[in-house]
Image (cartoon, rainbow, N blue to C red):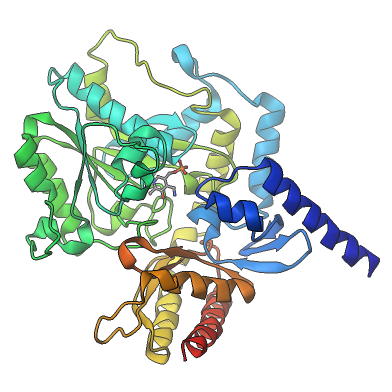
Length: 459
Ligand code: PMP
């Protein structure tokens, strides 16, 4: 009893300290300052986490779609410990190198499709995207086409929050927040509109990638960037043929194609990389998150040899890089993570669990009148809430339907996440890739109960 009391006090004390001293990313500042953290996590094992009171939750999102091998993976901790004890840090500036970064670069070259064989390291997804944009521009500069500076992204894309990544992100909230859009970034209709395949029927149509290329002039376009599956924007899968169409378009105009695999990389979609689902090879691929399963901070740009072969023609210094580019401990963790992914057939498990997840989502759609547009590829899944799916009537955005449902799930100890852009009420599901059938069924069962409670309150 007294132990229980003291952990409750500890929780309260931590919440107060959090409010006082800790400004959180991507968080409503005022609401947080008033209410404090919804959860203070203390430990984790597999798909489960515990808060400081010892309450257990299912982490239905692998945190930020990144803890792909699940929590409490001791081999990853051990790999970090061993590398830290031997050589915790070494610089990669001025050409300096070390064993783990070289080994990991070679491993990434073997895993990625085509001749994506050259690696530039960063500490995360945003840095990877900013690096890819700069490397693309630098490629064109060295190649004698310095006017190719423009980057075309997609509406509803998420690429991170550094300046370039924010500018490429297609949710204007991230840019308008502090006028954070750099010049030379453009946004085309998102891939779920089929735009590149010729469907221009959307009344809000602003332009496909092709229209922007033609309007701005292909000789000014450095690169097109897109997520193979849009994640934070709402888990949107491209229509069949879309990625291939973008690849063809880029080839037609000599534009570089960058795919952001920060979420989709390393098995999330049931293939090693998202683009493997459509047999497309980009010119540059950005990765982070799943490269270490979140156990260490690492990202990378993996580029075709033709990019490097161009860059080596210049005597210039590559004036770009991060103190933690190729961090030895992060690289050691990534190597172990990739070893486990292959050894334990993690990608195949993600594919197998897709079927279980899809069946569960279908059941929810049939049973609950507000559920629609259920979808899954590997362990990247979502469903949407409509007031009346049949007539297409949406909930009033001020009702915050998706939020309300996610709160019901949270009350039942399941953590999910919403995407509520443009009046959508999307709920994302992305458990760790080690999840088993019983656990997927438990997740569905909690969502089922939460939907029953949510719909009951609707009346
Ligand atoms: N790209 C995508 C597709 C992402 O989902 C994210 C993060 N959610 C990022 C880039 C940014 O990565 P980071 O937060 O590591 O900078």
